[in-house]
Length: 136
Length: 347
Ligand code: HEM
Image (spheres, rainbow over the protein chains, first blue to last red):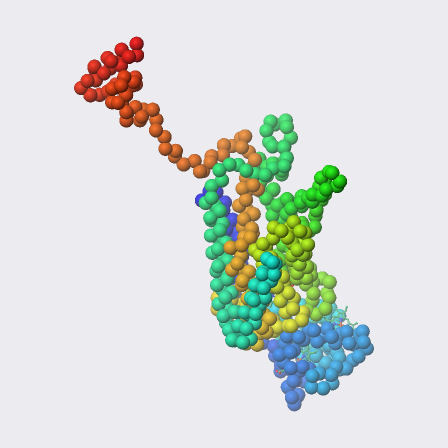
């Protein structure tokens, strides 16, 4: 090979960048998120059901929240009727966070794993259950 | 027609993944086996191509220059346009790779009456640079699916990319720019007749493929959402070489990843390999220093020569016998006789 030294150096640098995910995770424990549903309010529920079905919530909860925000603030509509016809008050704090009062063990558990930091808590207030230390 | 053919191939790829996952439930084939094969093909293929280029001799110094060459010390020379040292070549290459400098000089030839005029044409450069950088950013952002904990530079890039804070999930600008730029690059091939004329299926196919990847990605993020936690379980499995296939991931994810696998596997065998090729272009990576450093043509193989000595050795007897003068006398019995004859002949 002509200029083999330079070319091989180049290939090695490229491989160092391109295979990053394969060596970065070595030796790091892989902890899957485990959102906890054991809040007092949920425990008292007769039917352990969220606003919508579980699979819908897992994939679409941020779009639901976006819709809620627009309904409440742009359309002055503060009630939400779910698929089953059940009514909910549209509110991040008084609805979602009433049942899921364990933000750190619920929302944050997934969000840390997926590396999303919703900016909602810049303004919205979380009453953290005991653990203390709210916000993000 | 090249365009329609390529579009057909990409649609077929989407259908293959759709039928394979929805119909035949081949989640682990599309989610694990094919991605691994594609990545292996990508690395081996790319290294193979680069090594093959490295083995190809460059017979001449052929940098394309557009500035004064370095010669006498009192003549100012152009360091970037006609680099004379390795460092200047490095700078020139860096500007080329990072800013697409030569594409920036792209001109447009037009006739103005009887005259030919050249106007500036920056749209291709703009489209190209937006395309490549948004591709890079999208790729880096995807690291959040392949690393745990996610390194902070990914988060940093995400926060810049999403600073418009439009909608939920947060709109990432580069995803949209990527699709827009790829669409522009495609329309350019269709609308400009001279470019359409030279466009082949191999030009359209990568564009359609990337447009399809971006479209499925955007659909998956903003419209037909998937459970990203489960997706990350799968992708982390891939990165940790410990694959798992959680069930309940939407088909759109498998379509996305199948198209991406196609792109990776296709990469080393197509024009996309300019990723490596740009670094091995002799018209860019050579210094214009042929007045100072002798460039030995590596092609110079030992030429078969037949020297006069060898010639005489072969034919001496015959030469002597017909009286042709030789430099070395015959070494036979008649040596003396012959040499006498020779000297006579010379006189
Ligand atoms: C094996 C590799 C890949 C996997 C597993 C993957 C997976 C995903 C997933 C899960 C999403 C949705 C993200 C979300 O909902 O937040 C997404 C979005 C997207 N993907 Fe990929 N992807 C891969 C490679 C690529 C490549 C090579 C490209 C091309 C540049 C690409 C382009 C996009 C785009 C444009 C989006 C839209 C959202 C955004 O801008 O982030 N993906 N991908």
